[in-house]
Image (cartoon, rainbow, N blue to C red; front, side):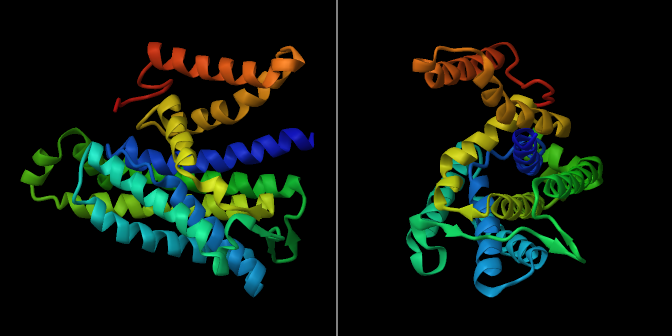
Length: 288
């Protein structure tokens, strides 16, 4: 049971990350590869405040959200000068910089040693120290992220985002400041990723820079491409597949001598076949 709860919590965290990134990539058409950076900023901000300053987890989470939103605002101003492949490359560069800071600023982040002893949340006499209550907390955060994302997607703001995705020049003709819209959704997405990062740090009770590399950004991007761009349910479905499928393959009965290699091969082949026959993703409404 504990094993299943552990997988469920990780799925919920990645579903939040998928929802937040889909707002930028799926709804706005901006290929961002920096999501793990904002995920990491939220995780480290919460971890540092909880362990070094005895700040309540929820206040630390809020601080992480604000720190990530500020970072997104600053990098978003730079990113607004680019489009297409250049946008992806510059955002990737930011992720590399963020990872390097986490790895080398040892006085603050402890570098490759990571930050241990991160406490679980505690609120109004209710402790989330065991995995069962923490699962409920993660589910509440996912529900909040889904409601926020659904509100954005269905609002006039969301319709402008889709118009930017389809033809930014055309929407500018009608007087819309597309830079502000792109910057706003980028900041919102980063804030949601930071909340997921704080949850992750508190759940694992230990973080180090290896959890926030460029490959983690690629993994989150794969979640929304697999589940379906511009579809919020697709983000949740993609997270379920990407998190649970590798674990399900543990029970496939491969020979012990090569089980790990065969699991990875089957996992990769499954993703390739899906992208060949369903390139827009399972529930996708938009293709990159």
